[in-house]
Length: 108
Image (cartoon, rainbow, N blue to C red; front, side):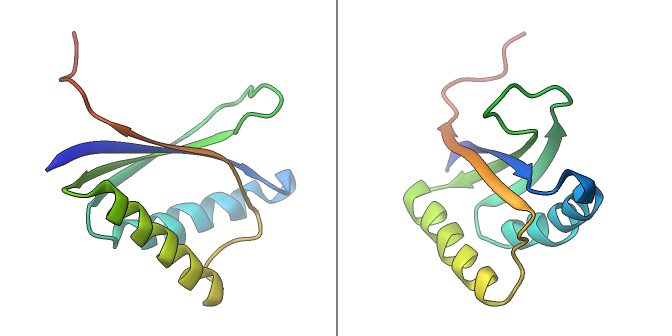
């Protein structure tokens, strides 16, 4: 199995509702994503001083999979289903996403 990380930068469309956005992200969205085979865990961060055009929030998902294409396709399919089910939040604005393959061990 190959190791990957997925970096997802987002913004909250209504800064006065960031608490609601973070509650949805932590308690609905992350658990939904972690149900997809290959997604192992997620850690979220906030940039308290983002520059123009960048994301304020960062989610890092750790992935182990034999086929990253199938894993990402499963994520996209689930996103469509979650949207239909009303599980996606209108407060979430995707800024950028990157899927990166691990090429070495942790350096010290």
